[in-house]
Image (cartoon, rainbow, N blue to C red):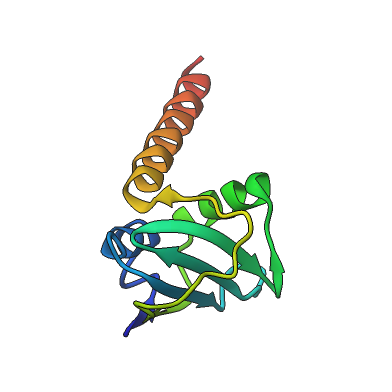
Length: 119
């Protein structure tokens, strides 16, 4: 079991800690106060659920981006080595690729904002 707050363990580091893991990551007390569940199997994000509803690809990507910069929120990861995720279809996004992709995307956005401010 892994639990804590995003102010102590930022979401990117939390995701990296799930490399190769299988289980359920629950997050709450986030901005907007919606409860979020991320289903992970063998280090891949299989699906995301928000307030009891499974998200489509576009919604899931937007939520991961928002979580990536979240500064507050409690979390708990419960390992479940022999379970079937409730996801159909599943995303199968490797957590390390999600972290790299979001890091790159957010860096580009910050760089773009800085350049626009200079002009």
